[in-house]
Length: 465
Ligand code: FAD
Ligand code: NAI
Image (cartoon, protein in one colour):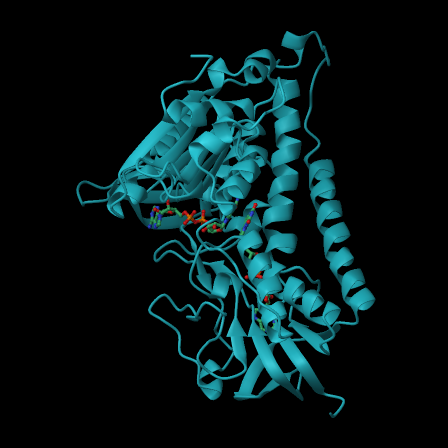
């Protein structure tokens, strides 16, 4: 083997790529990972999950102190003021710590970082920074980036994408968010808590597509109560950025009279698209589908021998933990082991307040697939811990198969829904019935008891309502 030869080259160091590289090295494969960014960790650690959660956490603390919530508990903090620079420094510290941590793990596990942009020169060779490398196997984990919107040019000054929205130097007076999905609601929440008026313009008739119908409805009610203005069934047809702000032109999604909205800043968050540009996939013989994704089989094979793909660049939910689990599985397959990801059980969490979490099928999906379903719902208002903590917005909903009682999906709006959903995912992974969850002893007083009671409600027997 020449110096430049590896058992495995992973392209991209996001949660899919870096995890695949580390696991492969742990299993004895000579592994390299190509990354063109200055730091490792991909979208997630650099400009995604981590910095957004840092700002969500910090802005939640600010809102609690600023809106008198603490005073209601007898905690008086005096006049509250915002030091946005310090908040951004906290965000950067979180990112630096975690991206540096991946570099440390690469060194510890002897994964070689090939710095630069990779492109295929054939089925078994790539070029990085002018140098050619070969490997027995490749894993493409190049992730995704922001989907642009025609007529609304992102300048990262007045019209920003999620990366720009993480770095605003001051709180905008009026922020218009285009797209009522996960990014729009999370980053919209950050800037609303810090003082911005936030208007969400959503093309569809409801926010949060893909979520359970009852969740979408209740989430919209809660966000409106918090002060979000939500304009559904509305499309943006153009944006003109000036020195002072942006004039957006909108019209009904189905067509109709146009009107304008004046904004200080605009966030474009209408989805993400796979990164395949500049990879020269054609030289490796790999084709992309209509969405630009690389299709793979159950074992992450692309159809070209020795080339695999995982994470956001492939079909499925664009989530860090989905990419990570695929990274572990593909490395185990390449090391001759069995690697499996159960794509039926991938939890998702929207880190707003309250949090919104889901795993498995929505009631609508289950019915559309022909299941006869039974559902059980339990409001957080009747959960003793939520009531004590005064965080009573939301509910837990369990969707079960009416014939077998097997849990098909769990949907939660609650302050700690992101933590609660882990139990539901594990139960589903073990093939639980709603009865299994209902008869599992849950600690009291805890928000998780609401999941137990929702499971009890599937057969009509909750205690506390
Ligand atoms: P990525 O993380 O996108 O990494 C791909 C890497 O490959 C990049 O670093 C890129 O520079 C590199 N690359 C691309 N092409 C090449 C090339 N040719 N040569 C060399 N390097 C290349 N998901 C969650 O689960 N939870 C969250 O809370 C969450 N929050 C998010 C918040 C925001 C604002 C955004 C934008 C996304 C968020 N996501 C979240 C989604 C999550 O970031 C992605 O699903 C995840 O990062 C996908 O991982 P990946 O490994 O497939 O790709
Ligand atoms: P998204 O797919 O969640 O939401 C995009 C929204 O924009 C949808 O509601 C869609 O109907 C709407 N839309 C599309 N075109 C539009 C138009 N022209 N005008 C108005 N609305 C339009 O995408 P988003 O929020 O950009 O996030 C991208 C991905 O990043 C998500 O798929 C998610 O998987 C991931 N992510 C995950 C997070 C988490 O797990 N907490 C946090 C942030 C992002």
